[in-house]
Image (tube, rainbow over all chains, first blue to last red):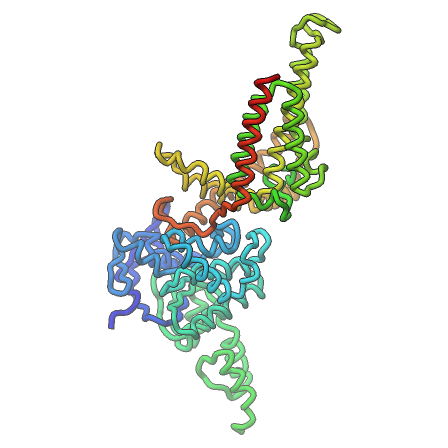
Length: 278
Length: 266
């Protein structure tokens, strides 16, 4: 079966740089998955995301969306199916009020007003921001603004949602709100989520983790495989997820835990059932 | 900064608040024309009554209107003074070199003062009772005929609404930069004109840079959300022209005819 997104040998160098930001990257992403792209600053992960909806045109290589080659003719149709939430809550807020901002993408695509009104309302309800519909952005918190940005994406009924470090400028509460929303959306099963992040605990929620460094794809695999290799993560400038740090620490202390990566939930259940194994 | 025109909207739900912004814009323009048609005191009295009635209908305290007058005060005094001292006439009360106060000068100065007063009250009423965004929408609608001459009406309207949306953001940014520069020892409040102007430089350059950053981020976000140009877009926000708006427009028509007739017989 054709994967939803297929990248073939992408190479891209920014104008003012001699080092390629993307260096021969090939990968595939299947529909319905939650993908986390991790890497330290300047590893090329945001550049990679920008090639997906044609914001950046790679000098070499091709992007396929649902089997269609992304080019000048197909780019607008593909953009309609890929929603992006960017890093800065303020700088992506176009509308003068919350409802206006959610409607912006639909306005661009010429959706008739009669259809827009219920879609705006539904999207705001999904992100639990309905009571703020008439508010101005200046009166919202960062987390609320990102939820509005997410509503704007949802209202366009995309197939893919890209979160380009969408939680990195938020306080812990705002981050928690956005992450739990993403978990719910993913559970509803209608979206492919691509989350670009250097928060390794956020990446731990994904189905697949893609590790990038120096514009190259270092490794792609389920979180368990990637996080098992603490040394690999550290070598590429990342930390190890909290649950993994706790597990290795406890194992060193002689606590008989599994020698594989454990998610937070798995770790907790192993810990409280420990005495049963004695 | 709140004293800028943009911050002057006075939230409310009065009769005037609920009128269509397009109507309010048209009436403001009409009112300015009427002011210049009026040449006699009875006409001014009539227009004055209209202003008083409108202010009353808005339910906003007179204080706010007087506040709207303040930034224009220098201009008013200057113009009135010009009329007062430089109008030559037959009944001269006082003379000193080229300066003179004559009966005609006094009358002209009074006319000018009243004209200013009435126009400022009416336009203050517009900004007090209409949200900036509504004004932008109204302008877009009224500018529609300009599309014939290829004027990018939709783009200008979007530009206007984005500009309005970023006013608070840029004010925040300004405060932040000012604080950062103060922490580095820049003094914005003391010294002569030149010294103060120089102190603005370390404020303006970072502000400019951050505006460009914001603009670039915003562009990326807008393109990602499918923005191409003003064509083929639909509208979420709409203006509703109600029967009351038509009634007020008709009443204004009657007032215009009445004023012209009045002027004719005076």
